[in-house]
Length: 120
Image (cartoon, rainbow, N blue to C red; front, top):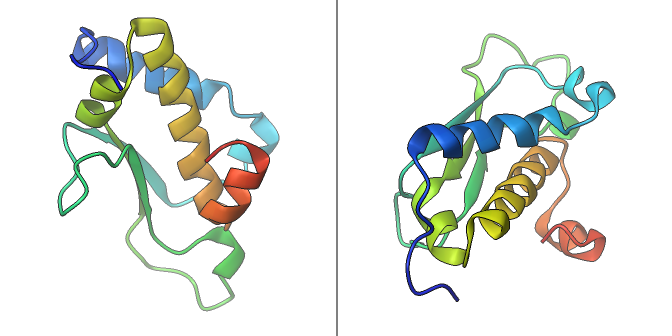
């Protein structure tokens, strides 16, 4: 566990999130709709070590009645990610893993399956 947060600007962090999204295959990105991806400093609630969060209705659970709803949200948390990692390279890698992890939740993949796939 890192003792100090990795020193990276908010703009650099946001760029790393954008690059992680760019690494998602276009065939999958084409299936993503009604989702906003946000970067926030810290998670709300009781888990200060939460790296990311998906809030919404997974694509696998949407049916013909799904519509006229606010966008789902994928939240990526700067503080916990920066504190988790020992250096910039590890942080960039962990941002990528977190983005993929939360995108997987959008597609209906749960934490147990993500752990099995090595994306836990």
